[in-house]
Image (cartoon, rainbow, N blue to C red; front, side, top):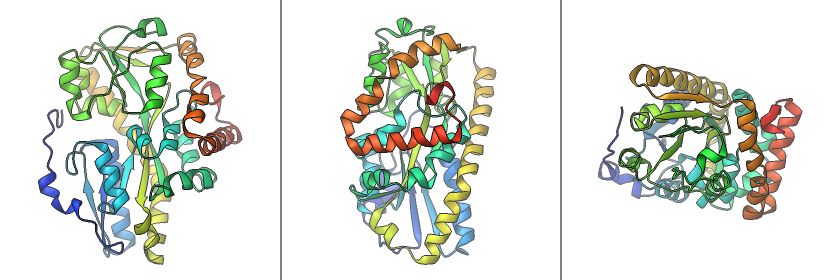
Length: 344
C-alpha cells in the first residue's frame, strides 16, 4: 500500500507558490492522486508524448498529491493563478467550477467506459460554449476528461438495496451534488480528507467509502472494510484543465503537440484505467477476504430510480449552462447508441 499516511511535501516544491511565465518550457502537471494511480499513469504517458512531440523543448513536471498541499482547492487555485499550468479536477472541483458536478451524476454515463471517454472528449461536448465558458469564467480551460473506472462502494455491512444504506456514514468528496445523491439513497454522507480516510475508516469515524478499485487498493482502504459493492452507478471522472492565460500563450507548435497528445490520450487513458483496475482487483482478492458483491439489475434499479431526480437538482444548483452541458452529453449518448439502462 502506498502513502497510507501522507506527509505533505510543500517545502519540496516551494516554486509552486510562485506564478510562472505563461511561456515557460516546463509544464507543471498537478495530480489529485498519488504515484501508482490512474492519474499518475495518465500523466506519465502524457509527459512522454509531449516531450517527444516537442523534441524535448518542453519538459513536463509531475506533481502528485502531497507535493502541492493536502487541500484540493489549493491545487485548483494554483492552476487558476498559473503556478501550475495543467491539473486534474474531479469531485472537489465543484466548489470552483459548479458545472463540473455533471461528472458526479449517477446513472447517466453509458455502461461502455470507452464510449464515455469518447463522448466526454468529443468536440461536441468538450468544445461546446456551455462547457468551455463554465471553466473560462474561472480562468481555466477544459482540455479533456479521464474516466478512471467505476466508483465502488465499501462498507462493513452488506449493501444491496437503499434500505441497507440507511444512515450509513459514507465518505464522499466535498461535492454538494454527491451529498444530495447519497442522501437520496438514505445514507448520511460525510467528507474527510483523502489522506486521513484510511485512519477514519479504521477507527469507525467513517462507515463506508466510494472510490475506483485502484484507489481502494492503492490506499489500502479495502484492508479496513468488510464488503466491496459494485453497483455500476457512476464512473469516477477527472477533468483535465489548464490555466487560461498559459493556454492562450502557447505557440502554434506547442498547441499542435498538446492537441495531438490529448487526442491520443483518450484511448491510452482508457487502457491505463482498465489495466489498473483489473490488476488492483486481483490484488485485493489475493491479499484479503473482503466480500465482493455485484448488484443485479433489480437491485440497481432501486438506486437508479432514487438518482433520477438528482439531474434536476444539478440543473437547479448550477443553472442553464449546466443543463446545456447535460443535454449535450445525453444527446451524444443517444447518437452513439450507448444509452443502455444507464444513459436512458
